[in-house]
Length: 430
Ligand SMILES: C=C(O[C@@H]1C=C(C(=O)O)C=C[C@H]1O)C(=O)O
View 1 (cartoon, helix red, strand yellow):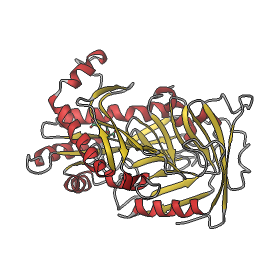
View 2 (cartoon, helix red, strand yellow):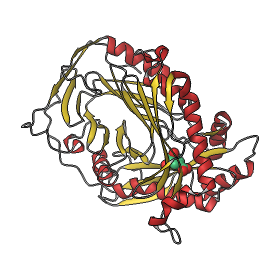
View 3 (cartoon, protein in one colour):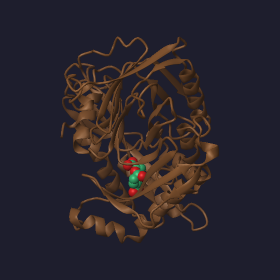
View 4 (cartoon, protein in one colour):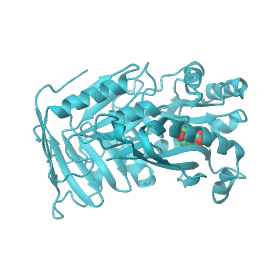
């Protein structure tokens, strides 16, 4: 699906310190109109309105998104005296986990407000008439009820047990299995309610929203700024539970052989696939521990410099790089193809854009893609069983890396800990 055949103008301006939009938190600036977000530690990008959008499915989804974005940028007039990454032409992207099923979406907002290194700017794409919309107050979704999704917790336990049975040292060594949870709300579900609550409780995660997929991910698949690329690979998780108090989790995780090799698969898969594009690629010898409110993870921060062949804009665009590395063993498994087939067979559900790359790209080749984790697909007014027909619906996702010594009961509990960020945001915790 392609829209916007007319020529577009992208205009960026710095917001002056006396502009009322200068100091307010980015998510607070959003009106309720096709919201998009990518915010971490108060900086990033939010946007609204739709200047153009593109949707596709299938094995060539990354390449098709890339080609559409290049064509659109070629038709844009750009007025950008600011010149920071994320200024000028901008698209938010959310790519499906697998070729089929699942839509991949690029959204070019009408208005973007961004902040980087303390500089705040506004970009309008197209007419710019939506720039000064006063945000309507964020609506409370009322009461929340939960029910099984396409794969219940019991079904998930069975899927994990079956995956463990099928693990072989010379075959599948890791597979990431997930399940879903449905939430229905008594009032319409305002995506901004989730964004504001998630950003408050998970400030060091990337709080994202693209076409109704809303979450706060701690995992960065790939960032490209100029010739440099970065990634934050996560795999290996612990969470507070009886006998495992929060203060001991980090040490436990670092000394857990199971979590260390589960992590190594993920790091190796990213590094192997990124290496051909890089003249330098630096990985620390040991992972570190990333502490979040609900869980702790083993984390490896990767840095690389693109080689001459890949560096030019368009040669190895961020979408092309993401195509090359996705799915890493953080969300797929090892070996990749067998693991993806096992996911399809044992989960038996449609992941949609959960565990796919999500983030933004600009017109100069810069961008950031996280992995869409700790998230939900939101339908603001879809609750089928709400008597007044007013309520909303969210489909939450959570999953875990399964290896030969995984315990199905513990994986169910780990997934429950990973549902918490969106559950608590839905329930209004900040
Ligand atoms: C699949 C998810 O998370 C992934 C799986 C992890 C694990 O199994 O330890 C850790 C972080 C993510 O890479 C999820 O949050 O749904």
